[in-house]
Image (cartoon, rainbow, N blue to C red; front, side, top):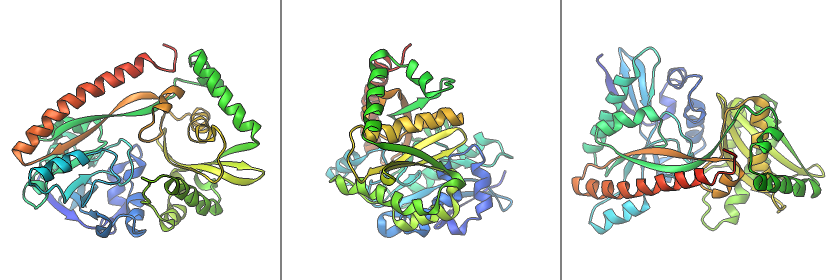
Length: 380
């Protein structure tokens, strides 16, 4: 199959239906054309902000058969696979680490396919083609490296064969063990943890807070502005917080992406006091942004985790990915899960140093996951 490789500098220059035909009904919601285009149109993802779109496309006979969302990065912010120490090491060695190329979804640590392929074509050969194309783009341009973050399992082998280094990380994912009710979920937990969950939920109820879930087309338009302010509230409270999104992006989602949204809203006396912005598709709930206007003990856990778990059980969703970090998720029934990223570093000496680091880091990750499984909040 004769193919043509191109770099496209805006999602608007790619046909929406062509791109979404690669994503498919079972693909990640964060790879859909509307989500990626909304980030660009709202000005959240631009060259000035260190995210210059360079989406890789593969065409055969003029038809889009494969693609990868890719960005030329001037920093390492908003990626959630942390390589700041690599950048520092490169600087000490007299090398430039930026700009670099990133294949991934901006500001979103959710696993999914990063190399999109058309269902009418064999995926394996296209994965190989894109993997080598990424390596060639990196090697023939003035960039230090190319990184593929939170990729799918079937992308690891082709990328490694093309010379990419494999890195693992840890997240905490909840899985639906055929629960029929929230009480079934509680019954699956060890006694101490079950008692703690009930105590936390009771404290929230006694504080007079009511929690409701709004999803899809039923989300009221007037909720989007307060949910944006909820997103800002967390950023403004944390000295390391960075505002990646703006109100225009939330308006873009309101206008054309309600189908994949799920808002959890906490109210006291009818007034919104906290909430969480979630995304859902194909049996998976993704927790993205939390915030509160009023501090209520345990409200974070009730809104971000317990309401999401109950929603998954009621709707038959099979997995809940609440985002990066936080061992406190583990104590509430979220299981340690490995995540994967692949990294191509054309400088041989730098690549050897990083490869040595990844061997040691990988052994540590294995120990962490094994230890967390042994200390699971769930019964065997």
